[in-house]
Amino acid sequence: MADKVLEVEHLEKYYQKKHVLFDINLSIQQGEVVTLLGPSGSGKSTLIRCLNGLEEYQKGTIIFEGKKIVPTEKNWQQIRQKIGMVFQSYDLFPNLTVIDNILLGPIKVQKQDKSAARVEAKKLLKSVDLEDYADVYPRELSGGQKQRVAIVRALALHPDFMLFDEVTASLDPEMVRGILNIIKGLANMDNMTMIVVTHEMNFAQEIADRVVFLENGHILEQTPAKQFFSKPKTDRAQAFLDSMDF
Ligand SMILES: Nc1ncnc2c1ncn2[C@@H]1O[C@H](COP(=O)(O)OP(=O)(O)OP(=O)(O)O)[C@@H](O)[C@H]1O
Image (cartoon, rainbow, N blue to C red; front, top):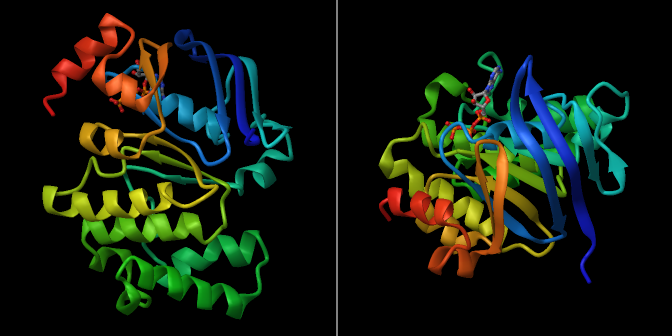
């Protein structure tokens, strides 16, 4: 049986008094691609931010590769380096060139060898058709190009686990396919474990091994993707799929 990468048990999350995640239980194996689906406001972003240590949580445990993720404890920065995250909003540093955005983490945080990290960054840029953009600033890039840089920046840290949060939501339609194809390529790599939050149902169907369906902060079902998209277990998930027009 494949190794367990992530184990979430009885997770509860509040924003002040607002209870937003309820008794979340989730177990992900190495190489598994999970899409996290659910209506707007159901808690998808909050859940993956908790998994990456970006949000504190109030109850339960998150164990990543055998280590507990607790944002208030010292070791979480180290654990987090193994988890790559790409957001809807790119979050590139505007005052750094593309290559410096990519190299910041590998060199400053991970202390990778500078010249080797640069060679690898260039290779990764080439893999997303941006080899000529290493020395430009983010403001000179289109949304799709910025998102490709953000993906490369995450990959340069050699993550074991990737989290994608609505990464095509801010993009013009003609940019979306290119980004989805890159993620699809990653999903097909052996041993790349990922959680993808998306509203692109055809894409979710193409890449997912399993669907986790969230509503109002509760996991209503966790179903193999094939089954989910042909006949989900719950009426709520069926209603969600019916509303998605795909
Ligand atoms: N920083 C915050 N402070 C207070 N409440 C928040 C905060 N962030 C999110 N929420 C609330 O938590 C709930 C879950 O939000 P979240 O963004 O996780 O949902 P989502 O499923 O990712 O939504 P969407 O698909 O629209 O991005 C919502 O009710 C939201 O209003």
